[in-house]
Image (cartoon, rainbow, N blue to C red):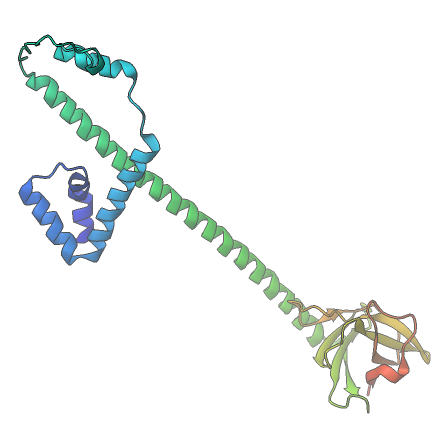
Length: 266
């Protein structure tokens, strides 16, 4: 038989409950000795029974002891006197014994089934949680993909002007791309290469409008799912530049801290 057929046969539960005959016990022990999966399944059943016993153990009521002594027709140990008591043998009721045995087998079998159900239920909950996480991850990836598609459509539009801001003498290797749609007035920045801003400082974009620098927004320091950074909208500008300012931005640019600059149409 396959592992699944052996497990579904219930012989492992019977072994754990002590209901197997000698040949069945030997068969189970041999199977478990040769098969790690069956051994693990048997250990799981035994642990489940131990756990159930610990969770549901109860102390017998005092009257149970009294009933036992009454059935045997003897006094409790602390009340026994020196008188010899002649115990009368009682006839063994096989029907009652058989009923109790069947009840015990049924009860223990139900315990095993219940514990397996609990274990299966926990696995279902774990899978449900994992599926929820996967669904959330899929939703997040879908949003990222939609953002990328929107950005690609924006930068590839014939209405979008691409303005490379090249590094000045302070940082000749720096490069930032500006994408400006004059119809929608939207401006996006793509940082290609800029030195890491130190603590307390942040890069700021400026639009040169009629010869004067106008704040176009700060460059976000934290990483983003988006490749493009949304900046302030502009209807007209002749050039763009980026300076390093105090964190949060400055009302006017620090010209000695200019890193890149580029003219519209250059």
